[in-house]
Amino acid sequence: MTDHIAEMKQMLAKARRTTNEDGFVVAALYKFADLPDYRELQPVVQQLCEDAGALGTILLAKEGINGTICAPAAGMKTILEWLADEPRFEALSLKFSFTTEQAFLRMKVRLKNEIVTMGVPQINPAQQTGTYVDANEWNGLIADPDVMVVDTRNTYETAIGMFEGAVDPRTTNFRDFPAWAQALARQDDNKRPKKLAMYCTGGIRCEKASALMKDLGFDEVYHLKGGILKYLEDVTDDTSKWTGECFVFDGRVAVDHDLQRGSYVMCHACRMPLSQTEMTHPDFEGGISCHHCKSTQDPARTRRFAERQRQIKLARERGKEHLGASHCKQK
Image (cartoon, rainbow, N blue to C red; front, side, top):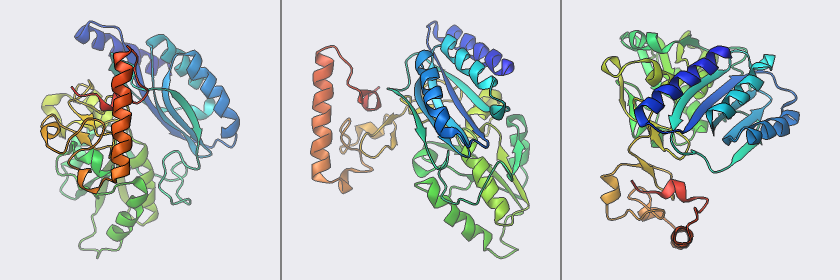
């Protein structure tokens, strides 16, 4: 974990040179591990994060830990040191980025049946998974013509960025992925891909998806270690095969290739990321609707969102920040 702390400090120093501001470290973390005492861990982890000034969400389940938190550097160091003292979190997957503003509204440690919900209970990545591929080896792998590159994320994520040549399963929820995977496995041998290279935001979904593909009989299955975030951190822009921005599950909405806050905002109604151009569409109303959801929106829901926006405006006029306002800001 000492290496992770050094990595965090290096990224923070680089970000401060770029922005000339103090700010926060965002850490995306996960580990598939046997945690039969995950319920007892919940209050411990909650107190740890609160004492460190961290906000975000951590999921605990019998199969492991998963989450994204945002904290001042000193607080993040305290959290990492605690994690380092827990042997079951050895080789914890960690990706860092930097933001000048707190990325979350509150701190929650939640208990779940799965740390990433796929709905196939027999799949256990701690016992079987695909082969890790480091970020600096990814370009070589996906250049192989026998490799099918698979984006295991959902359509609202793939809409703003993907690897060149990747297949999009067009899922709206990770629970939809097994059906797509099973259909691929049923293809004739002459159509069935020889090799699979899978990726996601931080590595957790593609790791679990690779375990599923192995269970379905695919022999050569690879997944990007650390996900897109690690790739953007380690691979220079001039050699990158990534196109667009990467959706993240916090107030930044997306990050660019330098892991800085991107150019998208989120529609509060349907959670789709919106570009600056899309926000000029007639159906866009900040915090209420966009062209993705306007035509299907329930009038009662529209009124509820409109009232919410009114409350946000009133809070700002009083010099306060409404709890949900960060996802409705226009840039």
